[in-house]
Image (cartoon, rainbow, N blue to C red):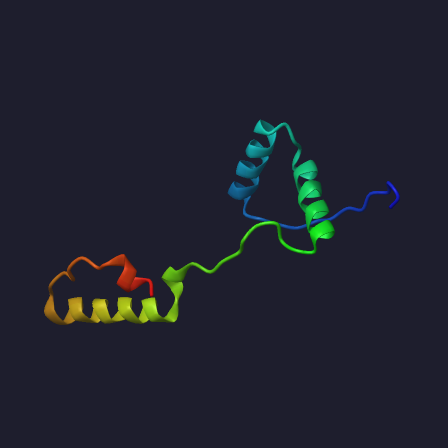
Length: 90
């Protein structure tokens, strides 16, 4: 592998970018160095080096349960009682 560099450009939320830059500074890294470390690990391992998962809150089952609770509240004018998180996020 030669030492030539290639520019990579992408966009992210400005607040996220600022927070990322602050975190990198605290680690003694530039943002470029941090992304290079990430890219090197992905290239070597052929995988994202951390778990990527879907938040179960947005599952079809949970959204249906939430809509049902909202309909119940609107129909009765009452608040819905406490929900057991284990039931809501199934």
